[in-house]
Amino acid sequence: MQSTSHKKSTPLYLQIAKTIRSRIHDGEITDDEALPSERDLTEITGASRVTIRKAIDKLISEGLLYRKQGSGTYVSPRIEAPSSFLSSFTDDALGRGDEPDIVWIVKSFSTATADEASQLDIALASEVVRLGRVRLANSEPLAIENAVIPKRFLPSLDLLDSSLYEALAKLGHRPVRGRQKIRASLATPTEAGLLQIDERSEVLRIERTTYSAAGEVVEFTRSAYRGDRYDFISELN
Ligand code: 16G
Image 1 (cartoon, rainbow, N blue to C red):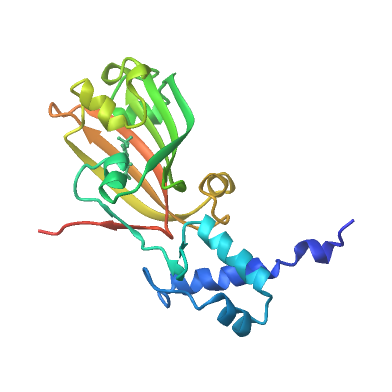
Image 2: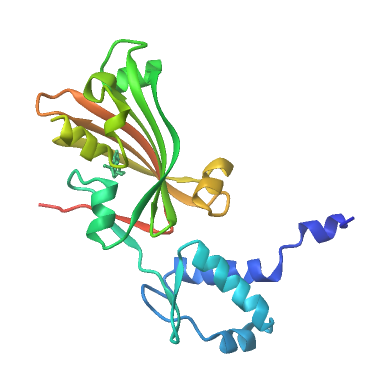
């Protein structure tokens, strides 16, 4: 059996990963900049090559670093998401040349809670489509999105393959304007697991309400986006 003190001590590779993560976080090593070589990191830290590689692999799996064949390890550029126009996750990812993907948590008809009914401006206990999705790009989990849509805008789930806005567009209900609220927060243990980040890492909590041309609420979505990967850009006129 492991002793308590052993259980509590953080493995060296995680400590090294944490140090590199905070250097990236503090902007000491930035987008597309090379990390020191494994050999240099071995010398700097006094850790073995295996430990250094394990730390780097951990940060690659988190999406913070990427390897270039025969060249080294680099800092992944942060994702710039437009927040001044109504783009979809799918379009944003494809626009960057990334491959979007989804892990479905829930995709079903449901009854609106009192809060949701008020956000959607519909009668209490109306039927809604409830979508819970982990959004990925190039296999990297980036955000968790929980959306509710009044059922009359999406009466069948068959049309919804991956993109919500594409399904709504097919039915003539793609939202035309919206309002978004962003605030800083920390990942809950469940969110951390889904996003494959450490518990209490920074996330951006976003609430988006979107409207049809007639001014009806089409969607109310609560999301948690990874704070270590996203910059939201607003155009100022
Ligand atoms: C974005 C929206 C989300 C919307 C989704 C549709 C933010 C913070 N959220 O992720 O509200 O439901 O796009 O994307 O931007 P989809 O058409 O790929 O499902």
